[in-house]
Length: 69
Image (cartoon, helix red, strand yellow):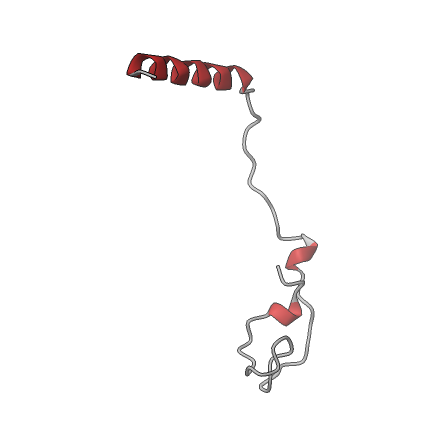
């Protein structure tokens, strides 16, 4: 394949992609504030071993208070 054939192929592909594109609605910011994956359970504070990894001391990362997301 020579350079001109490659250029033609690229132009054809770009034109095909442009024809499939549809005008999108105005972008809106996503609000994850009320999603259940961001809910945190209230657990008593721990200065002992981690609830998830008992061989490690708790570093208050919050993983055990959430669904792990």
